Amino acid sequence: MIAVIDSGVANLASVLAALSRLGASMQVTTNPELVREADRIVIPGVGAAAAAMEELRRNGLVEVLRAAQQPVLGICLGMQLLFARSDEGQGVECLGVIPGRIRKLETTPLFPVPHMGWNNIRFDGDAHPLLRGIADSSFMYFAHSFAAPMLDCAVAYAEYGERFGAIVAQDNFFGCQFHPERSGPVGLKLIENFLDL
Image 1: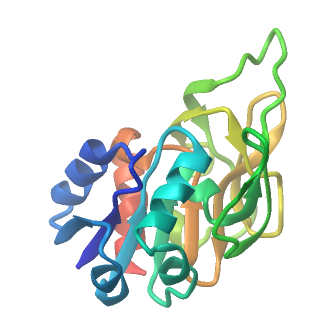
Image 2: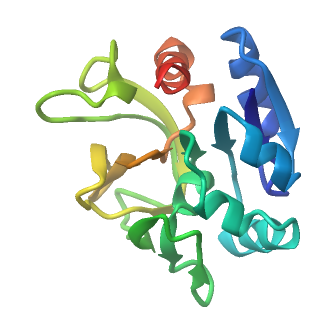
């Protein structure tokens, strides 16, 4: 069973539709016990990190997620919540299961923020298991203003005025800055790979 976390700022419909297309058994929940018992955890999200973290705290999910042993996938804002901090607003303490800080993308005339639309992801060397069957330079759908810098946990990157982590992986925690559920067959393949981990 896959626990899909309702952080109060999540875009749940498209995530649930993608999981359904893959035949997955899922439940949208904020119940800590159901999250602990799940085989997989998905943290979707759009919007503000502070609001999402407050909702996780209110539902007693912060420590549950930090202690998770099963595979966890954060999508867009859900990926950013995996890091220690976000620079959004006055700064937000996040889950801290991946060291590092989420930063605002730099705005330039050629690269206005938010970064919206299709962009390709790149990876060097052997592909991470999340990328099995996915070609280097595949296009994914992005919609974000904040991003992870290029840290050791980045297993794929994208460029939008600057290079940033597009997919991160540390232990049983994984994240993608783009929306795989909105990225067509290639994005669906990434979700399938996560379910197969």
